[in-house]
Structures are given as structure tokens and as C-alpha cells.
Amino acid sequence: MNTFAEIDTSARDMAGYLIKEMAKKQGVTEELKATDMMRWIGLMNNIRACADEIVLNDIVYS
Image (cartoon, rainbow, N blue to C red; front, side, top):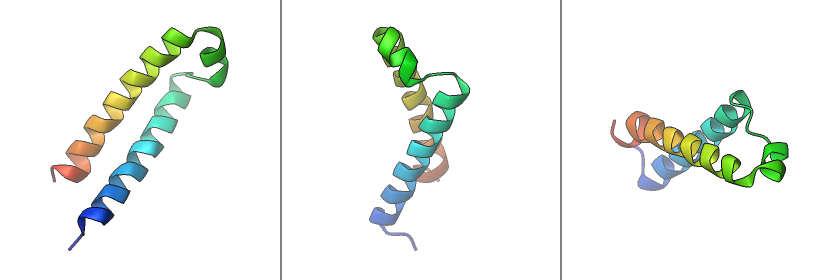
């Protein structure tokens, strides 16, 4: 049986990995952050929301 701490750690690790991979695949880079901060923020917010949705469905709600 998983404890809440283990589930939290797994969820955070998965979210971090997903955010990093999605940003790489969508071309969201530090260079974009330096040249167009608002676009970078919007893209990262979208990526974070998608990653959170995946984590919630795969780990938390299951």
C-alpha cells in the first residue's frame, strides 16, 4: 500500500518529467524565454496544465 508521501513524490516526479519533455518537444526554450517572455509563460502554463491533468488521471484518481 502506498503512503500519501509516496504518491505525492511519484506525482511530482512524473509532472516534472512530463513538463520537461513536453517543453522540449514543443520548442519551449530558455532562448524563447529571453526573447518573448509572455509567449513562454503562456506555453509553459499550457504544458503545466496538461501535465497536471495526466498526473491526476494516472496517479491520483486511479
